[in-house]
Length: 376
Image (cartoon, rainbow, N blue to C red; front, side, top):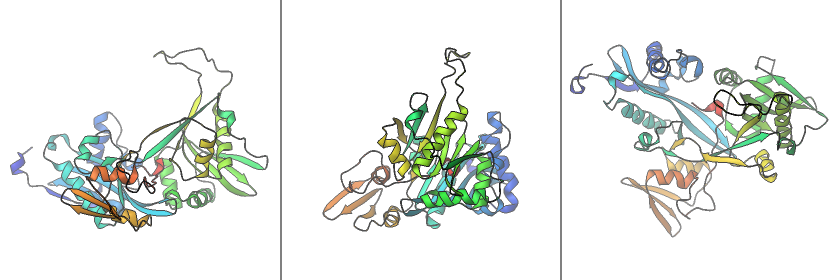
């Protein structure tokens, strides 16, 4: 590779439809092939690398070769009556021989400007490289809860009512099934807005194992999406969701299995348990779990970025708090109260989980939630 001072690179800029194969080659090389996997990025993220979304994929090229790339997927997320425009970040990659040139950071900065230009309220990404993204203004914020169920507590959940039929599916090909599930999902107003086609594509891409649904009075009233031993999404009436969790546990439990054995790594076998992901609140099912005192593991969600903090407040109908910028700091004012915070502190002030200040303590943290199907 040429030295940094002699590089004549094209970008960062949006990818063109005719550059899709080169984009996928770059991303697959770093994210799949280098890790011993197959080049499955197009199948794993069909909505991101679809030709119509390539204008939201930013690249750097050296001649005809894509050498750095980052994908964005913008969608609308509903939470407690608020709609947020959220930009998910996918696969920040640079080919090994082009690293240490600042290309990844430059592509991310272009993506962040694009989020702002597109009127996004939040950026969202998952990573273990927290400190690298912190340099670009991202911060871990918001929380998710993980509940665990086993033979010792599953019967605390209510059984499905007698007038409810529990039905099971392994795909969404049944006529109108996707539409019926979306009716429940959108009525809950929790998570991303989807079309039936998008739901079907994400269902396959995220390798959902099964759907458990509750049919009551000839209508679908609740559902679960399961993958492995985890409920990765649910929706509908709280008691019916609980009944579905109990029904799924019963179907996957093997009472006759040995409970005294260990595997080759000396880990216990036959200790059947399932887990369920959930937001911190905002749905009656979470209230039900909390009222029955199910323990849960709480930890920060992924990393958030605030292109326009004032627009976030406006989306939630908060009019009496003003955020302005002074250099690298943000001034947050409410009446006579005034604090100065950096971008990281501001993200936590608005979305938690830590309490940065008592200013706005009656309003913050703001709720935010995306289901695993919407993670990029």
